[in-house]
Amino acid sequence: MGKSPLLETSGKRSLRARQARAQRADRRADNAGWLEHIHGAVARVGSRDTAFPHRANGYNFLVLSQWVEPAITGRCIAWARETYAAMESFAADGRYVNYLDDDEPGDAVAAAYGPNYRRLRELKTRYDPKNFFRMNQNIRPLG
Image 1 (cartoon, rainbow, N blue to C red):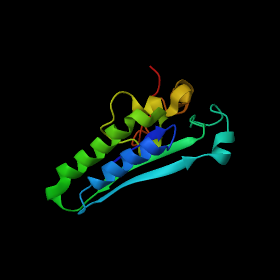
Image 2 (tube, one colour):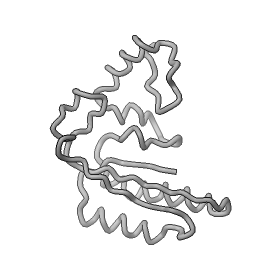
Image 3 (cartoon, rainbow, N blue to C red):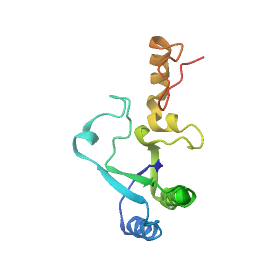
């Protein structure tokens, strides 16, 4: 199970929150919080130049929980969800579409593409109006 907010900063409060959550992880599972720095060339591209609009310097925080023992499934899922919730106060607008999970609230795909979502739906309507390519975090055609 994975969840992932974009973060505006990786300051001391954020670090303490991540450390506190790491200490609560079940040691029988591979529970991790990965911090990916978004900067450099990524931030020099315009927000409407590609599908991915989130181009400000910042961070992506990936909460990942993997396990093999069925007995700890509930604990691992709870840890991932609680860790994500603990990081929400540090979250920026938007999401990284490749890390969206099946239990995302609202329209997480629209949030991931932000201001580009409407344009992407128009393209989807033009080139895939029957939504044949839908086995991922899907952009639905208009209509």
